[in-house]
Amino acid sequence: MLIPHKKFNLLVVDDELIIRESLAGWLQRDGYQVETAESGVQALKKAEAQHYDIMLVDVKMPEMDGLTLLKHLKERDPATAVVMMTAYGSIEDAVEAIKQGAFDYLLKPFDLEELSLTIDRLVQIQTLAMENIVLKERVAKIDRFEELVGRSEPMLQLYDTIMDVAQSDVTVLITGETGTGKELVARAIHAQSPRGYAPFIAVNCGAFTEQLLESELFGHEKGAFTDAKFTKKGRLELAHSGTLFLDEIGDITMKMQIDLLRVLETHEFTRVGGTMPIHSDFRVIAATHQDLLAAIQEGTFRRDLYYRLNVVHIAVPPLRERRDDIPLLAEHFLVRYAAETNKKIDAIHPEALEAMRNYDWPGNVRELENAIERAVVIGKGRQIQLADLPFFGPTDQSAIVGRSLEDMEREHIARVLEAEGGNITRTAQVLKINRTTLYHKLKKYGLKTCS
Ligand SMILES: Nc1ncnc2c1ncn2[C@@H]1O[C@H](COP(=O)(O)OP(=O)(O)OP(=O)(O)O)[C@@H](O)[C@H]1O
Ligand SMILES: [Mg+2]
Image: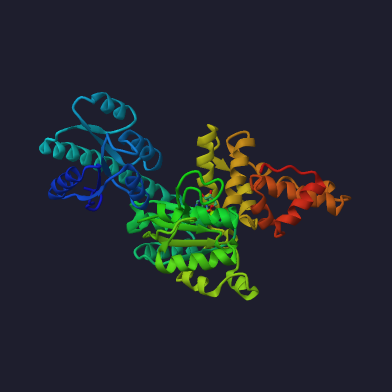
Protein backbone atom coordinates (compact mmCIF):
# COMPACT_ATOMS: atom_id res chain seq x y z
CA MET A 1 0.00 0.00 0.00
CA LEU A 2 1.23 3.48 -0.82
CA ILE A 3 -0.12 5.33 2.16
CA PRO A 4 1.28 4.75 5.60
CA HIS A 5 -0.95 2.53 7.74
CA LYS A 6 -3.98 4.55 8.65
CA LYS A 7 -6.34 3.88 11.47
CA PHE A 8 -9.93 4.51 10.50
CA ASN A 9 -12.00 6.71 12.82
CA LEU A 10 -15.60 5.69 13.35
CA LEU A 11 -18.46 7.40 15.15
CA VAL A 12 -21.58 5.50 16.21
CA VAL A 13 -24.60 7.79 16.64
CA ASP A 14 -27.63 6.28 18.41
CA ASP A 15 -29.85 7.45 21.24
CA GLU A 16 -29.95 3.98 22.76
CA LEU A 17 -27.05 3.29 25.08
CA ILE A 18 -27.13 -0.47 24.62
CA ILE A 19 -26.82 -0.19 20.83
CA ARG A 20 -24.01 2.38 21.02
CA GLU A 21 -22.01 0.26 23.41
CA SER A 22 -22.47 -3.05 21.65
CA LEU A 23 -21.68 -1.70 18.19
CA ALA A 24 -18.66 0.22 19.42
CA GLY A 25 -17.35 -2.83 21.24
CA TRP A 26 -17.78 -5.07 18.23
CA LEU A 27 -16.08 -2.63 15.83
CA GLN A 28 -13.24 -2.00 18.25
CA ARG A 29 -12.56 -5.73 18.20
CA ASP A 30 -12.36 -5.42 14.41
CA GLY A 31 -9.47 -3.01 14.97
CA TYR A 32 -11.16 0.34 14.44
CA GLN A 33 -10.93 3.48 16.49
CA VAL A 34 -14.55 3.99 17.62
CA GLU A 35 -16.30 6.78 19.47
CA THR A 36 -19.99 7.27 20.22
CA ALA A 37 -22.51 10.08 20.28
CA GLU A 38 -26.01 9.98 21.76
CA SER A 39 -27.62 12.57 19.51
CA GLY A 40 -27.28 14.30 16.16
CA VAL A 41 -26.27 17.53 17.85
CA GLN A 42 -23.49 15.83 19.78
CA ALA A 43 -22.33 14.07 16.60
CA LEU A 44 -22.05 17.38 14.75
CA LYS A 45 -20.06 18.88 17.62
CA LYS A 46 -17.64 15.99 17.54
CA ALA A 47 -17.36 16.16 13.75
CA GLU A 48 -16.34 19.78 13.99
CA ALA A 49 -13.45 18.94 16.26
CA GLN A 50 -12.13 16.06 14.18
CA HIS A 51 -12.68 14.15 10.97
CA TYR A 52 -14.45 10.79 11.06
CA ASP A 53 -13.91 8.46 8.13
CA ILE A 54 -17.14 6.60 8.76
CA MET A 55 -20.29 7.34 10.75
CA LEU A 56 -23.01 4.89 11.68
CA VAL A 57 -26.20 6.89 12.15
CA ASP A 58 -29.55 5.78 13.55
CA VAL A 59 -32.46 7.13 11.52
CA LYS A 60 -34.92 7.52 14.39
CA MET A 61 -33.61 9.79 17.10
CA PRO A 62 -35.35 12.50 19.15
CA GLU A 63 -34.45 16.16 18.43
CA MET A 64 -32.44 15.75 15.26
CA ASP A 65 -33.26 12.68 13.19
CA GLY A 66 -30.66 10.73 11.21
CA LEU A 67 -31.63 12.19 7.83
CA THR A 68 -31.19 15.75 9.07
CA LEU A 69 -27.83 14.82 10.55
CA LEU A 70 -26.83 13.27 7.20
CA LYS A 71 -27.69 16.50 5.41
CA HIS A 72 -25.53 18.59 7.78
CA LEU A 73 -22.65 16.15 7.49
CA LYS A 74 -22.71 16.21 3.69
CA GLU A 75 -22.44 20.00 3.81
CA ARG A 76 -19.67 20.18 6.35
CA ASP A 77 -17.46 17.17 5.84
CA PRO A 78 -18.42 15.43 2.59
CA ALA A 79 -15.48 13.03 2.97
CA THR A 80 -17.23 11.25 5.84
CA ALA A 81 -18.98 8.08 4.65
CA VAL A 82 -22.34 7.62 6.36
CA VAL A 83 -24.05 4.28 6.99
CA MET A 84 -27.64 4.57 8.18
CA MET A 85 -29.24 2.21 10.67
CA THR A 86 -32.95 1.66 10.40
CA ALA A 87 -35.60 -0.70 11.71
CA TYR A 88 -37.48 -3.17 9.53
CA GLY A 89 -40.61 -1.51 8.26
CA SER A 90 -39.06 1.89 7.59
CA ILE A 91 -37.17 0.94 4.49
CA GLU A 92 -38.34 4.09 2.68
CA ASP A 93 -36.20 6.12 5.11
CA ALA A 94 -33.21 4.05 4.05
CA VAL A 95 -33.95 4.66 0.38
CA GLU A 96 -34.24 8.39 1.04
CA ALA A 97 -30.91 8.31 2.89
CA ILE A 98 -29.14 6.68 -0.06
CA LYS A 99 -30.63 9.35 -2.33
CA GLN A 100 -29.17 12.00 -0.05
CA GLY A 101 -25.70 10.53 -0.22
CA ALA A 102 -25.50 7.84 2.46
CA PHE A 103 -23.12 5.04 1.51
CA ASP A 104 -25.30 2.14 2.67
CA TYR A 105 -27.85 1.13 5.27
CA LEU A 106 -28.15 -1.62 7.84
CA LEU A 107 -31.38 -3.08 9.12
CA LYS A 108 -32.12 -3.52 12.80
CA PRO A 109 -31.85 -5.88 14.58
CA PHE A 110 -28.26 -6.22 13.53
CA ASP A 111 -26.42 -9.09 12.08
CA LEU A 112 -22.99 -8.16 13.42
CA GLU A 113 -21.17 -10.17 10.77
CA GLU A 114 -22.96 -8.18 8.12
CA LEU A 115 -21.98 -4.99 9.92
CA SER A 116 -18.32 -6.04 9.77
CA LEU A 117 -18.60 -6.80 6.07
CA THR A 118 -20.21 -3.46 5.26
CA ILE A 119 -17.57 -1.52 7.17
CA ASP A 120 -14.76 -3.60 5.61
CA ARG A 121 -16.05 -2.86 2.14
CA LEU A 122 -16.26 0.84 2.95
CA VAL A 123 -12.72 0.90 4.30
CA GLN A 124 -11.46 -0.73 1.12
CA ILE A 125 -13.19 1.82 -1.06
CA GLN A 126 -11.89 4.72 1.03
CA THR A 127 -8.37 3.32 0.97
CA LEU A 128 -8.49 3.02 -2.81
CA ALA A 129 -9.72 6.59 -3.12
CA MET A 130 -6.86 7.74 -0.91
CA GLU A 131 -4.29 5.80 -2.87
CA ASN A 132 -5.62 7.45 -5.97
CA ILE A 133 -5.02 10.87 -4.45
CA VAL A 134 -1.50 9.81 -3.43
CA LEU A 135 -0.75 8.62 -6.97
CA LYS A 136 -2.06 11.83 -8.49
CA GLU A 137 0.04 13.86 -6.07
CA ARG A 138 3.12 11.86 -7.02
CA VAL A 139 2.68 12.58 -10.69
CA ALA A 140 2.07 16.23 -9.89
CA LYS A 141 5.16 16.22 -7.71
CA ILE A 142 7.44 15.12 -10.53
CA ASP A 143 5.87 17.71 -12.79
CA ARG A 144 6.40 20.41 -10.23
CA PHE A 145 10.05 19.86 -9.65
CA GLU A 146 10.60 19.73 -13.37
CA GLU A 147 8.80 23.05 -13.51
CA LEU A 148 11.81 24.72 -11.95
CA VAL A 149 13.91 25.46 -14.99
CA GLY A 150 17.53 26.59 -14.79
CA ARG A 151 21.01 25.11 -14.93
CA SER A 152 23.01 28.13 -13.74
CA GLU A 153 25.25 27.77 -10.71
CA PRO A 154 22.85 29.64 -8.36
CA MET A 155 19.98 27.39 -9.48
CA LEU A 156 21.99 24.20 -8.97
CA GLN A 157 22.78 25.39 -5.46
CA LEU A 158 19.12 26.14 -4.95
CA TYR A 159 18.14 22.56 -5.93
CA ASP A 160 20.63 21.21 -3.40
CA THR A 161 19.17 23.39 -0.66
CA ILE A 162 15.65 22.33 -1.59
CA MET A 163 16.59 18.65 -1.29
CA ASP A 164 18.35 19.28 2.04
CA VAL A 165 15.54 21.18 3.74
CA ALA A 166 12.85 18.89 2.29
CA GLN A 167 14.06 16.01 4.43
CA SER A 168 13.40 17.74 7.74
CA ASP A 169 10.55 19.79 9.15
CA VAL A 170 12.48 23.04 9.59
CA THR A 171 10.74 26.33 8.97
CA VAL A 172 12.00 28.04 5.83
CA LEU A 173 11.93 31.69 4.88
CA ILE A 174 12.15 32.33 1.15
CA THR A 175 13.09 35.81 0.01
CA GLY A 176 13.58 37.25 -3.41
CA GLU A 177 12.34 39.94 -5.78
CA THR A 178 8.92 39.69 -7.32
CA GLY A 179 8.54 36.94 -9.92
CA THR A 180 11.74 35.06 -9.04
CA GLY A 181 9.90 31.80 -8.33
CA LYS A 182 9.49 31.85 -4.53
CA GLU A 183 6.20 29.99 -4.63
CA LEU A 184 7.61 27.42 -7.02
CA VAL A 185 10.49 26.80 -4.61
CA ALA A 186 8.06 26.39 -1.70
CA ARG A 187 6.05 23.85 -3.70
CA ALA A 188 9.20 21.96 -4.66
CA ILE A 189 10.26 21.70 -0.99
CA HIS A 190 6.84 20.37 -0.06
CA ALA A 191 6.73 17.93 -2.97
CA GLN A 192 10.14 16.49 -2.11
CA SER A 193 9.35 16.19 1.59
CA PRO A 194 7.76 13.25 3.41
CA ARG A 195 4.66 15.46 3.63
CA GLY A 196 4.44 15.50 -0.16
CA TYR A 197 1.37 13.27 -0.17
CA ALA A 198 -0.54 15.67 2.09
CA PRO A 199 -1.92 19.09 1.12
CA PHE A 200 0.12 22.19 0.30
CA ILE A 201 -1.96 25.08 1.60
CA ALA A 202 -0.98 28.55 0.40
CA VAL A 203 -2.20 31.74 2.04
CA ASN A 204 -1.47 35.09 0.46
CA CYS A 205 -1.23 37.14 3.66
CA GLY A 206 -1.11 40.39 1.70
CA ALA A 207 -4.48 39.81 0.07
CA PHE A 208 -6.68 40.04 3.18
CA THR A 209 -7.64 42.57 5.80
CA GLU A 210 -6.60 41.65 9.34
CA GLN A 211 -10.03 40.30 10.23
CA LEU A 212 -10.39 38.23 7.08
CA LEU A 213 -6.88 36.84 7.38
CA GLU A 214 -7.66 35.80 10.94
CA SER A 215 -10.69 33.78 9.92
CA GLU A 216 -8.88 32.48 6.83
CA LEU A 217 -6.05 31.11 8.96
CA PHE A 218 -7.85 30.03 12.12
CA GLY A 219 -11.34 29.40 10.77
CA HIS A 220 -14.48 30.63 12.50
CA GLU A 221 -17.45 29.31 14.39
CA LYS A 222 -20.95 29.80 13.13
CA GLY A 223 -22.18 33.22 14.24
CA ALA A 224 -18.71 34.55 15.12
CA PHE A 225 -19.52 37.59 12.97
CA THR A 226 -22.38 38.70 10.73
CA ASP A 227 -21.32 36.77 7.63
CA ALA A 228 -20.35 33.60 9.48
CA LYS A 229 -23.33 31.48 8.51
CA PHE A 230 -21.45 28.20 8.89
CA THR A 231 -18.56 26.94 10.88
CA LYS A 232 -15.51 27.15 8.64
CA LYS A 233 -12.20 25.35 8.99
CA GLY A 234 -9.16 27.58 8.75
CA ARG A 235 -6.15 27.02 6.51
CA LEU A 236 -4.09 25.97 9.51
CA GLU A 237 -6.50 23.11 10.04
CA LEU A 238 -6.61 22.19 6.36
CA ALA A 239 -2.82 22.05 6.30
CA HIS A 240 -2.84 19.24 8.86
CA SER A 241 -0.09 16.72 8.03
CA GLY A 242 0.98 18.92 5.11
CA THR A 243 2.68 22.26 4.49
CA LEU A 244 1.41 25.77 5.19
CA PHE A 245 2.81 28.38 2.79
CA LEU A 246 2.57 31.89 4.21
CA ASP A 247 3.11 34.11 1.20
CA GLU A 248 3.84 37.84 1.54
CA ILE A 249 4.47 37.40 5.26
CA GLY A 250 5.97 40.93 5.38
CA ASP A 251 2.49 42.35 4.90
CA ILE A 252 0.81 41.18 8.12
CA THR A 253 -0.20 43.51 10.94
CA MET A 254 1.47 43.62 14.35
CA LYS A 255 -1.49 41.88 15.99
CA MET A 256 -1.39 39.05 13.47
CA GLN A 257 2.35 38.74 14.01
CA ILE A 258 1.74 38.10 17.71
CA ASP A 259 -1.05 35.59 17.05
CA LEU A 260 0.96 33.78 14.43
CA LEU A 261 4.04 33.57 16.62
CA ARG A 262 2.01 31.87 19.32
CA VAL A 263 0.55 29.36 16.86
CA LEU A 264 3.93 28.56 15.35
CA GLU A 265 5.22 27.79 18.83
CA THR A 266 2.34 25.61 20.01
CA HIS A 267 0.61 24.49 16.80
CA GLU A 268 -2.57 25.09 18.75
CA PHE A 269 -5.25 27.71 18.18
CA THR A 270 -8.98 28.40 18.45
CA ARG A 271 -11.35 29.33 15.68
CA VAL A 272 -12.62 32.92 15.66
CA GLY A 273 -15.59 32.96 18.04
CA GLY A 274 -14.66 29.55 19.42
CA THR A 275 -13.14 28.29 22.64
CA MET A 276 -12.11 24.74 21.79
CA PRO A 277 -8.37 24.42 21.22
CA ILE A 278 -7.51 22.80 17.89
CA HIS A 279 -4.24 21.11 17.21
CA SER A 280 -2.78 20.88 13.72
CA ASP A 281 0.46 19.37 12.52
CA PHE A 282 1.80 21.48 9.66
CA ARG A 283 5.18 22.51 8.36
CA VAL A 284 5.69 26.21 7.71
CA ILE A 285 7.29 27.87 4.72
CA ALA A 286 7.04 31.66 4.46
CA ALA A 287 7.96 34.02 1.65
CA THR A 288 8.34 37.73 1.11
CA HIS A 289 9.79 40.16 -1.40
CA GLN A 290 10.32 42.65 1.40
CA ASP A 291 13.46 43.32 3.38
CA LEU A 292 12.35 42.05 6.79
CA LEU A 293 15.53 43.18 8.54
CA ALA A 294 14.79 46.73 7.44
CA ALA A 295 11.18 46.27 8.61
CA ILE A 296 12.50 45.18 12.03
CA GLN A 297 14.61 48.34 12.18
CA GLU A 298 11.55 50.41 11.34
CA GLY A 299 9.55 48.62 14.01
CA THR A 300 6.96 47.13 11.66
CA PHE A 301 8.08 43.51 11.91
CA ARG A 302 8.71 41.57 15.10
CA ARG A 303 12.20 40.27 15.62
CA ASP A 304 11.02 37.13 17.48
CA LEU A 305 8.72 36.17 14.60
CA TYR A 306 11.53 36.77 12.14
CA TYR A 307 13.79 34.33 13.98
CA ARG A 308 10.95 31.81 14.22
CA LEU A 309 10.50 31.86 10.45
CA ASN A 310 14.08 32.31 9.39
CA VAL A 311 15.43 28.98 10.66
CA VAL A 312 16.66 28.29 7.16
CA HIS A 313 16.85 31.17 4.75
CA ILE A 314 16.62 30.67 1.00
CA ALA A 315 17.34 33.69 -1.16
CA VAL A 316 16.10 33.17 -4.70
CA PRO A 317 18.43 35.15 -6.98
CA PRO A 318 17.02 37.69 -9.44
CA LEU A 319 17.10 36.66 -13.08
CA ARG A 320 19.74 39.25 -14.00
CA GLU A 321 22.16 37.40 -11.71
CA ARG A 322 21.71 34.15 -13.62
CA ARG A 323 21.58 35.28 -17.20
CA ASP A 324 22.65 31.84 -18.45
CA ASP A 325 19.17 30.60 -17.57
CA ILE A 326 17.44 33.15 -19.81
CA PRO A 327 17.65 31.15 -23.08
CA LEU A 328 16.58 27.97 -21.29
CA LEU A 329 13.61 29.67 -19.64
CA ALA A 330 12.62 31.43 -22.86
CA GLU A 331 12.68 28.09 -24.68
CA HIS A 332 10.67 26.45 -21.89
CA PHE A 333 7.93 29.10 -22.03
CA LEU A 334 7.97 29.11 -25.84
CA VAL A 335 7.20 25.38 -25.93
CA ARG A 336 4.44 25.83 -23.35
CA TYR A 337 2.69 28.79 -24.98
CA ALA A 338 3.10 27.57 -28.57
CA ALA A 339 1.37 24.35 -27.54
CA GLU A 340 -1.31 26.25 -25.64
CA THR A 341 -2.12 28.56 -28.55
CA ASN A 342 -1.58 25.91 -31.23
CA LYS A 343 0.96 28.05 -33.06
CA LYS A 344 3.90 26.73 -34.99
CA ILE A 345 6.58 28.87 -33.43
CA ASP A 346 9.63 26.88 -32.43
CA ALA A 347 12.61 29.21 -32.41
CA ILE A 348 13.83 32.56 -31.17
CA HIS A 349 15.80 34.84 -33.49
CA PRO A 350 19.42 35.23 -32.23
CA GLU A 351 18.95 38.99 -32.10
CA ALA A 352 15.90 38.62 -29.86
CA LEU A 353 17.73 36.14 -27.65
CA GLU A 354 20.70 38.47 -27.33
CA ALA A 355 18.43 41.35 -26.34
CA MET A 356 16.76 39.18 -23.72
CA ARG A 357 20.10 38.14 -22.31
CA ASN A 358 21.11 41.77 -21.91
CA TYR A 359 17.88 43.04 -20.46
CA ASP A 360 17.63 43.43 -16.67
CA TRP A 361 14.20 41.84 -16.09
CA PRO A 362 12.95 43.82 -13.08
CA GLY A 363 9.89 41.52 -13.02
CA ASN A 364 12.17 38.46 -13.23
CA VAL A 365 10.91 35.09 -14.49
CA ARG A 366 7.29 36.18 -14.46
CA GLU A 367 8.13 39.12 -16.73
CA LEU A 368 10.04 36.81 -19.06
CA GLU A 369 7.15 34.38 -19.08
CA ASN A 370 4.68 37.16 -19.92
CA ALA A 371 6.98 38.52 -22.63
CA ILE A 372 7.20 35.12 -24.33
CA GLU A 373 3.48 34.53 -24.02
CA ARG A 374 2.78 37.87 -25.66
CA ALA A 375 5.38 37.28 -28.38
CA VAL A 376 3.78 33.92 -29.20
CA VAL A 377 0.38 35.55 -29.50
CA ILE A 378 1.44 38.45 -31.73
CA GLY A 379 4.27 36.64 -33.56
CA LYS A 380 4.02 35.70 -37.20
CA GLY A 381 6.21 33.06 -38.81
CA ARG A 382 8.16 30.35 -37.02
CA GLN A 383 10.55 32.55 -35.08
CA ILE A 384 10.12 35.06 -32.31
CA GLN A 385 11.56 38.36 -33.54
CA LEU A 386 13.07 41.24 -31.61
CA ALA A 387 10.07 43.38 -32.52
CA ASP A 388 7.71 40.86 -30.87
CA LEU A 389 9.20 41.58 -27.45
CA PRO A 390 7.52 44.36 -25.46
CA PHE A 391 10.70 46.07 -24.30
CA PHE A 392 12.73 45.75 -27.45
CA GLY A 393 10.53 47.07 -30.16
CA PRO A 394 12.70 48.99 -32.67
CA THR A 395 14.05 52.08 -30.90
CA ASP A 396 13.43 54.66 -33.48
CA GLN A 397 15.30 57.80 -32.32
CA SER A 398 12.73 60.05 -33.94
CA ALA A 399 10.07 58.40 -31.79
CA ILE A 400 11.88 59.55 -28.65
CA VAL A 401 13.32 62.96 -29.50
CA GLY A 402 11.00 65.82 -28.76
CA ARG A 403 8.74 63.91 -26.41
CA SER A 404 8.00 65.01 -22.88
CA LEU A 405 8.99 63.15 -19.75
CA GLU A 406 5.32 62.72 -18.90
CA ASP A 407 4.69 61.14 -22.25
CA MET A 408 7.48 58.65 -21.71
CA GLU A 409 6.32 57.96 -18.18
CA ARG A 410 2.82 57.19 -19.40
CA GLU A 411 4.13 54.82 -22.03
CA HIS A 412 6.49 53.09 -19.63
CA ILE A 413 3.79 52.53 -17.01
CA ALA A 414 1.46 51.17 -19.69
CA ARG A 415 4.10 48.71 -20.86
CA VAL A 416 4.99 47.44 -17.41
CA LEU A 417 1.30 47.15 -16.55
CA GLU A 418 0.80 45.03 -19.64
CA ALA A 419 3.87 42.90 -18.93
CA GLU A 420 2.52 42.21 -15.44
CA GLY A 421 -0.88 41.22 -16.77
CA GLY A 422 -2.61 44.25 -15.23
CA ASN A 423 -1.59 43.33 -11.67
CA ILE A 424 -1.28 46.54 -9.64
CA THR A 425 0.84 45.20 -6.80
CA ARG A 426 3.44 43.70 -9.08
CA THR A 427 3.47 46.68 -11.43
CA ALA A 428 4.15 48.95 -8.45
CA GLN A 429 6.97 46.63 -7.32
CA VAL A 430 8.63 46.63 -10.72
CA LEU A 431 8.34 50.42 -11.02
CA LYS A 432 9.59 50.74 -7.43
CA ILE A 433 6.77 53.09 -6.42
CA ASN A 434 3.99 52.41 -3.93
CA ARG A 435 0.51 51.39 -4.95
CA THR A 436 -1.07 54.72 -4.04
CA THR A 437 1.37 56.59 -6.26
CA LEU A 438 0.68 54.11 -9.03
CA TYR A 439 -3.07 54.64 -8.69
CA HIS A 440 -2.58 58.41 -8.94
CA LYS A 441 -0.51 58.04 -12.08
CA LEU A 442 -2.95 55.61 -13.68
CA LYS A 443 -5.71 58.09 -13.04
CA LYS A 444 -3.66 61.01 -14.28
CA TYR A 445 -2.79 59.25 -17.54
CA GLY A 446 -6.19 57.64 -17.96
CA LEU A 447 -4.75 54.14 -17.99
CA LYS A 448 -7.03 51.18 -17.40
CA THR A 449 -6.34 48.17 -15.19
CA CYS A 450 -7.85 44.73 -15.25
CA SER A 451 -8.27 44.49 -11.49
N1 LIG B 1 12.89 28.66 -12.29
C1 LIG B 1 11.71 28.73 -12.91
N2 LIG B 1 11.40 27.89 -13.89
C2 LIG B 1 10.21 27.95 -14.51
N3 LIG B 1 9.25 28.83 -14.22
C3 LIG B 1 9.48 29.71 -13.25
C4 LIG B 1 10.72 29.70 -12.53
N4 LIG B 1 10.67 30.68 -11.61
C5 LIG B 1 9.48 31.27 -11.75
N5 LIG B 1 8.75 30.69 -12.72
C6 LIG B 1 7.39 31.09 -13.16
O1 LIG B 1 7.29 32.50 -13.00
C7 LIG B 1 6.05 32.86 -12.42
C8 LIG B 1 6.28 33.54 -11.08
O2 LIG B 1 6.76 32.59 -10.13
P1 LIG B 1 6.32 32.62 -8.59
O3 LIG B 1 4.87 32.93 -8.49
O4 LIG B 1 6.80 31.40 -7.95
O5 LIG B 1 7.17 33.90 -8.15
P2 LIG B 1 7.19 34.67 -6.75
O6 LIG B 1 8.61 34.88 -6.41
O7 LIG B 1 6.34 33.95 -5.78
O8 LIG B 1 6.56 36.06 -7.16
P3 LIG B 1 5.79 37.18 -6.21
O9 LIG B 1 6.81 37.80 -5.33
O10 LIG B 1 5.26 38.16 -7.20
O11 LIG B 1 4.73 36.43 -5.48
C9 LIG B 1 5.24 31.58 -12.28
O12 LIG B 1 4.39 31.47 -13.41
C10 LIG B 1 6.28 30.50 -12.29
O13 LIG B 1 5.77 29.32 -12.83
MG1 LIG C 1 4.51 34.56 -4.89
